[in-house]
Amino acid sequence: QVQLQESGPGLVKPSQTLSLTCTVSGGSISSGGDYWTWIRQHPGKGLEWIGYIHYRGSTYYNPSLKSRLTMSADMSKNQFSLKLTSVTAADTAVYYCARYGSKSGEGYFDHWGQGTLVTVSS
Amino acid sequence: EIVMTQSPLSLPVTPGEPASISCRSSQSLLHSDGYTYLGWYVQRPGQSPQLLIYLASQRASGVPDRISGSGSGTDFTLKISRVEAEDVGVYYCMHALETFHTFGQGTKLEIK
Figure 1 (cartoon, rainbow over the protein chains, first blue to last red):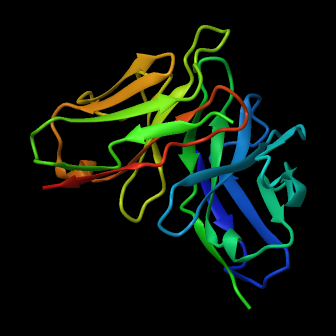
Figure 2 (figure 1 turned 135 degrees about the horizontal axis):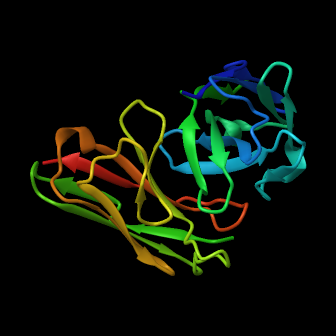
């Protein structure tokens, strides 16, 4: 059973960089068709897809965040990461990592982390 | 950007009664590979979202058969034949037609 666990600071100052890591267990991030995803949820709000990365390095980002966003993957640690620069209070949210099955006939997020709350505040 | 619109946004249901949630997309979710890339997720209180339905009508592993998805093109429905207490939560539809995934606003199902 694939499990995902987010980690990172729960508090980030405005204008600084938000950095999160997702550790995957029970499966490998180098599984062919899988994309490793970040999704966030603003307090009391709905879900927003941030972007995802394939282990070979392909990335796809939400256009509204693209200029501030970088994702990377570390196959040796079976982890993938997110960096979001120049954060503001609007980036305060619960951040989830998830696995996306991208093959024909899939198209779903089937494994999710528990989520981590990141608050942007001075 | 594909816009996903759900209704209703709030759904009070008596246990044992059916429930239905509608989702409409701003463009057809039928892919050239023949599949329709629409999924349903539920976020139970205090939990992460969980996959219920993919490809508009395929139940994910472990999802009871009283939960079903239907629809095509731009109009989709999630139905629960007999609501139970464990069904309380927020239900989201999401498209997977293109890489910029978007979700519906969410429908909050509560028990009357």
